Image 1 (tube, rainbow, N blue to C red):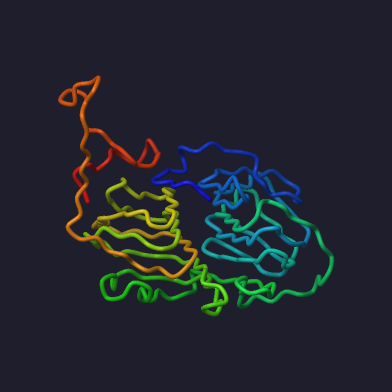
Image 2 (tube, rainbow, N blue to C red):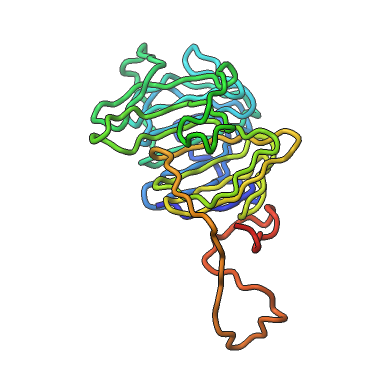
Length: 301
């Protein structure tokens, strides 16, 4: 499984040659989070030169979200805010990417493997998608810039001020597959706050697109990322007064909030070989995090 990452600023991460096999051109990637067991990952990709690849299929469920630049897939042109997703084994058309383009790339249930395939070259079905069943699914394409914000249908009235754009939702029938993967954009308005401590039964990850938000693990700014395995508690949240904040979120199931009220963080122990009065507070059980996201809020929720 992937380790807990909270928070990391992309500028703190090293560039690596991109795992974009089968293409011609030069691309680099920053690994936001990585599963060393099966190759699943979330990465930021920069195409340093023009990049081209023939049609074929991935070994993993694969998603692209365009941050900057231009991508052409078959006859479709993708600019900033556009998204596509292909389940493992589904042939996708040839791709061409302009130099300087930046994307977020996500892989699930597999590594970087890609096979060129001329089969079904004309097949290009930009709708639906279901990898929860034994069916291969279809290609999902959407342009978030042309979508309207919708109310937060997942978290009820307590989060009514949060707005969403659903890019992908696995429609697997309950009982056949309960994963129900969701990829979406989220926006919190200026001055939005939630003082609860929350955790979920599913993993949650997010990449910050705009604005800022403060909470117990630090500050979200553009390019800040987290990956939380299931059951990691987090909160309380406060957005900036000027513009709020927005993110790209991914979840591997229904977003259920388990709430802890009147929470406290207490660290106790007997000092053995140091003076706790002069050596400051002790932090225990907290994840490794970025050096750029600010000091820990030891007094927060």
